[in-house]
Length: 125
Image 1 (tube, rainbow, N blue to C red):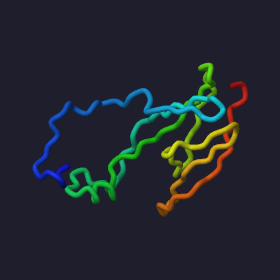
Image 2 (image 1 turned 45 degrees about the vertical axis):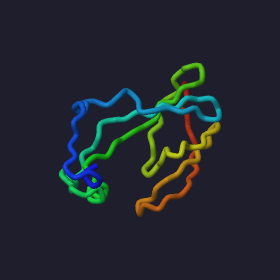
Image 3 (image 1 turned 90 degrees about the horizontal axis):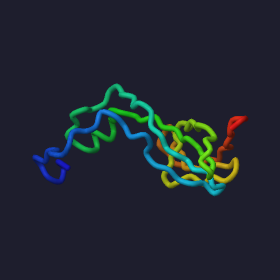
Image 4 (image 1 turned 90 degrees about the vertical axis):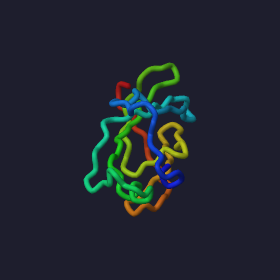
């Protein structure tokens, strides 16, 4: 905001000290419900806490969130927790049907590409 309006300062409520129980959800083509959950954030070394320029802030972020999905049948029965592989992008929403998951992935060099995964639901779920 300061790039657009110099002298701008946050005047809203304090930032909460905790995260919500979940961030969002979507249904796959098999009717399962995927709930995106966040774990504790990881503080990154070399970040720019007081960056003046947005580009500097984005180039040297201070936090990385860890997230996973909790998957439920349409009936609400919990099927299990799905850990997310490195680089997995959930925007746009991945295509998921049966055991097939197709999602955008960002490589280590920042190159986007599409990757196909096989979903494995734990036995007894």
